[in-house]
Length: 276
Figure (cartoon, rainbow, N blue to C red):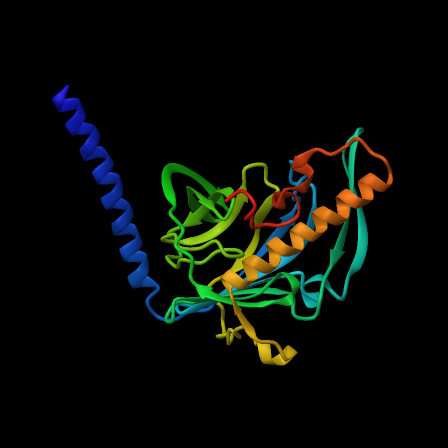
């Protein structure tokens, strides 16, 4: 029994050492600042229970110091979009959601040197916060995405359980949206039912020419930066107002449908704060 336990411990230790060696080798290999561009699909299906919702084009520009993830931007969709989309889940369930883009898009900028995450987020609020510490659990499971071998990781982050697939071939801690902090680039990520789903389309790395990564600029819209606590409070208040308006509408129709799960933030927002 002691021998088997020792073997198990040594095996796990060897796996960890092997991963560290691979990451160290790749870090040295990519030590010079090189620019990369990942194109993702960004699918939002909050409250639908499956990845059937609005699908946006997204991209992540990165180098050794910073990264910028953008989606719902006019130029990424070939022009401005403002339309209603009919989504049929099955014969008994359908949804009508809006697909809307804007000139700047939603932006998420990771500043490694200053340890800041700068976002142009919901409500076009400019939000400044410390880069969130995400406690990832890395497993032995692997799969290929494009030409990259990826490892599986999982975590709990702001109300959702996420699975991410990352590659140590590009040992930079970036990923789509606010997901980051792994010892390699995240190429795919999703929550439990893929209501939030970031999927890989293509990558250019290293790029032939260096692209300057522009951080979100609040002055371009005459806005002030707010803290994450202020932003969180804004979303919670907005959600509460939506609940009250929804209940008033239901009562006006004399409806008996008052299921509480219809009012959870998870049916409207990526980040969920009403279950804290």
